[in-house]
Amino acid sequence: MDALLILDLQVGLVHGPDKPWRGEAMLEAVNTLLDKAHAAGAPVFLARHMGPEGSPLAPDSALTQLIPDLRLDGSEQVFEKRRPNAFVGTGLVEMLRECGATGVVIAGMKTQYCVDSTCRAAGDLGFPAVLVADGHSCSDTPGLSAEAIVAHHNGTLAGAFCRVVNAQEIEF
Image 1 (tube, rainbow, N blue to C red):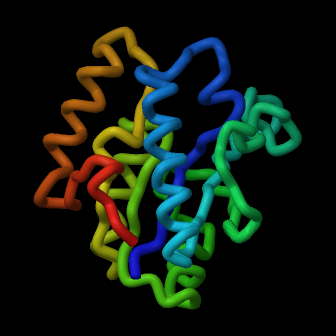
Image 2: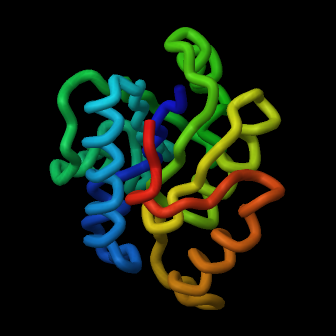
């Protein structure tokens, strides 16, 4: 069974000054996935990105808390990470193996950093990945719009690194 892996849906990244592109639609897609995973008894993991002391995402910052908009039921495993790749230094591989997960469905923030890095690593670690096409986002950058970043990653990651599927089509 696939596990649901939600990356960095934290107060500072979702409700901060740089709002994610299609943030409400992304959140609805993620909540749809949470409902499906809970109903199927699939394991759910939520990563919280921690920055260095003194940064906006310092470990003691309220900005690192998960957003209250998520439909959580208390069965989820929450873990902290300090690198874009959610597998580095977190014990995620061991947690996935322990619960019997055979793959991961990936959603969350930010497309060009944590979502990209985690999708690229998952298969190499033995967990074929599904990227939720409408379940990840980011903010505009000086060089590219968030819409272009999301479209680029959905196209680039598809096939070589993961399957790319809309939330409504995913079953656990």
